[in-house]
Image 1: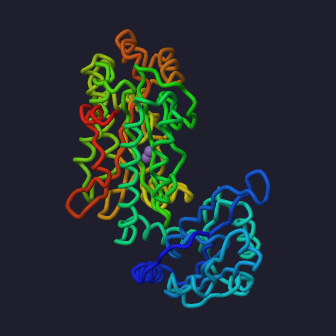
Image 2: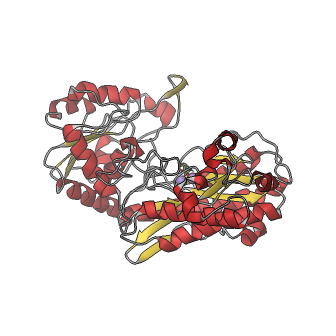
Image 3: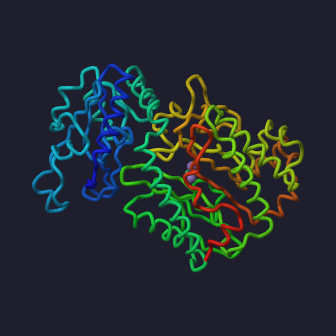
Length: 459
Ligand code: GLY
Ligand code: MN
Ligand code: MN
């Protein structure tokens, strides 16, 4: 367990959050923090990450704990460490001290929870030991992969409505994560000229995050094969004509995330083909951010990105036809197959443990269209929401080989022209954008994204 300095402002923030929850539900909620998963034997575990819904209300990453929330009150359930644990883990704060740090109204051993589960709702935790315990105590299946039902669904909806927009406490943490992530990307760019493999650039980036006593908010992507969207290999050598795609974000000690992608040339200079495509992706990125404002549909922002990318590819002679028609045909998705972004908060894809409950406005469902199916957020924007904007261009062999065969797309691509862009395998530019009352604020704006400025940061 980490011991954190907490302050009365944390206590106030947590109190406000549970009071707001109490206005939305009239039954108790029990949220578990989860437990560590063994890696190769019981005493050697993966790093502990507390469940995000627990963290939102409890504020601290306490393993093997639970909180019971009712009518604005918080009861903490956890056991004091065994006396022997001090030998291996040092002295840890006792339950009563932690209760004070988070402003709990009561603190009890975890075994007492079983007498207080009647009529309580919960949200499934990802680790099997915990969801098994949740299911046993509440006497119904609480499975992470199953959509919540009944009062669990009511609780999930209430929590989503709170976590969709960020309070001042959350924003302070999200800004910290953004600042450190910006520094990590600058370090990655600076380390590139001397690096021989992707792993060295990754090391430079994650080194900054670790040095701030933070962790990565997801597995870093640092690759010369950006066409593999979530590439988690780091062994490739860096060649002078390669682009590095780095999608790396920090997570604060309290669990709040950032999510940034930059793409830069190993040599320090984009080739003309790389720069042409980079500028198309950047044009889509800038157009989307300019459009962010309360009331705007995030789905329209995705379509705007698709249109700007289609227009840019038509101008470059890669796509043929009218941009609007190409988007209706999903031709842009041959090169931009994912959604324009997602919610960001305690989770990098915030609240995706609840499926599309957070990302999709009630009554909306995922489209089965090739160009829309991976859209993770489909709601009107509201002040306090934090979203990513992350357009990209990729030459994914599995998609393009298929399109060559298919009559639907065969004729909309100038395949000969495309072959001149062989040195552009994957480009993505991703920033974290807060919706404000009158527009937006880019929390990651301190990291340059114009091609010239990115070149200047290398070496
Ligand atoms: N880092 C994962 C994503 O951008 O969605
Ligand atoms: Mn993202
Ligand atoms: Mn990302």
